[in-house]
Figure 1 (cartoon, rainbow, N blue to C red):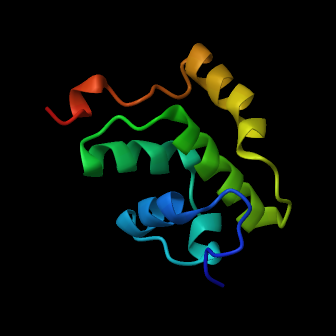
Figure 2 (figure 1 turned 180 degrees about the vertical axis):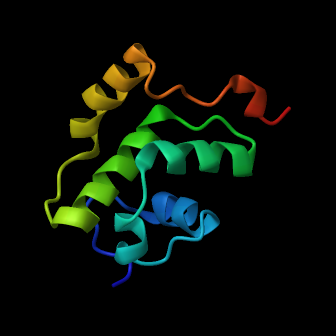
Length: 97
């Protein structure tokens, strides 16, 4: 099944998933949002807005469970992982100069 119809996935997120080589919900369901976000930043050389990370989390959740939650529902858990050190956002050294 394609990525169209996922609640939080519009043209920009579909482009990000394309860059990452993800084309189906099944592929997305097997992913980890932290890893996807980091890979996107490294591949593009840009430190993306943290909301992109939350969109990835929401899309993965919907792909796994069928439950469509707003992307901001995932913001507190991302922030908590950042605070406790279990997820460290990609360094600003990845920004394009």
